[in-house]
Figure 1 (tube, one colour):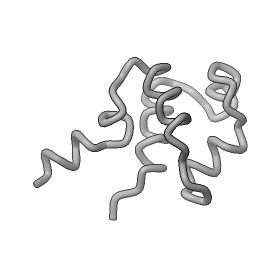
Figure 2 (figure 1 turned 90 degrees about the horizontal axis):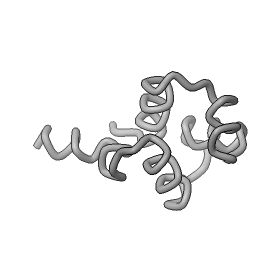
Figure 3 (figure 1 turned 45 degrees about the horizontal axis):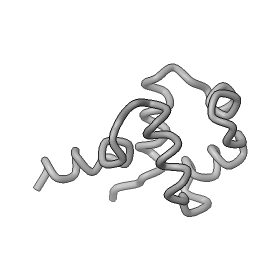
Figure 4 (figure 1 turned 180 degrees about the vertical axis):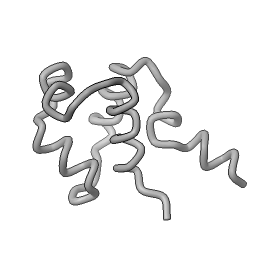
Length: 72
């Protein structure tokens, strides 16, 4: 089953960030990053927009939608 939290973690690690360093760079708390990556909380669109802009990628790419579309 697809998990958006796994995609968020993938992009964070791909870009060489720990949760703490990403929190410092984006202003999003480390605790929230942990909750979203683990699936304990729903991810607000504002968080996704902030991360997509930070990484320089589209929202589709951030959440793995481009991968999911290609699997169909």
